[in-house]
Amino acid sequence: MNKPSLLPPAAGPFERHAEQATARLGDVPPDVRKVWNPDTCPAPILPWLAWAFGVEDWKDYWPEATKRAVIRNSIPLRRRRGTRAAVEDVVRSFGSNLLLQEWWETTPPGTPHTFAVTINYGAAEATVTDEFQQDIVDQITRAKPLRSHFTVGVGLEATTQLNVIGYLRAGTYSRLQLAG
Image 1 (cartoon, rainbow, N blue to C red):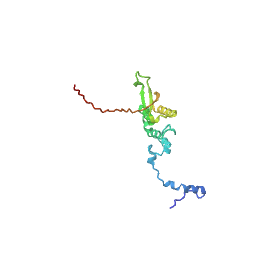
Image 2: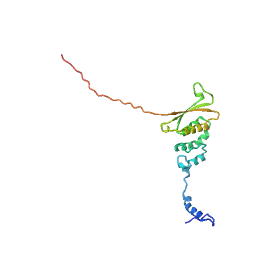
Image 3: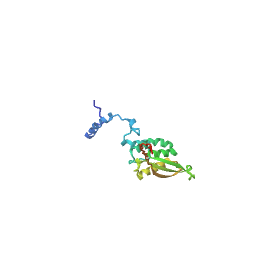
Image 4: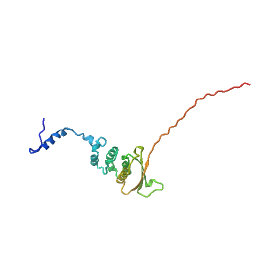
């Protein structure tokens, strides 16, 4: 059964053909739960999901896993903004580990309201660009307490494996008895 047309009687052939071509689009049910979930949202729609979740900084060259993590952490980050946990979560969303030392944790104690961040990249992220590092610094600036100042250091985290090889040499020993 054909649906009634919503076009006015004076509609031209282009409008009529466009209506026929798009008639079935209304029959496709959208999976809203899939679209509003950062883990299951199709990759081309991620920028709009980031906008809806209030992500303040978005770069197209970020890896997909980073984009999903930034969206996933955007609401909890807003709740904890201005805390140490917020800074740690921001760096973790970029797939990096960090060592964060506040001024009172150093020996001797440093200047009040300062902290140092050392970002450790794993072996898989060894090709991180300058822009990507600057994005991390910008996100830390947004997440940190306003009165605090920080320095950033970058390190490369590497793991290795130590293999110990041993061998056993079988031998026989016999006692010689000489008679004389």
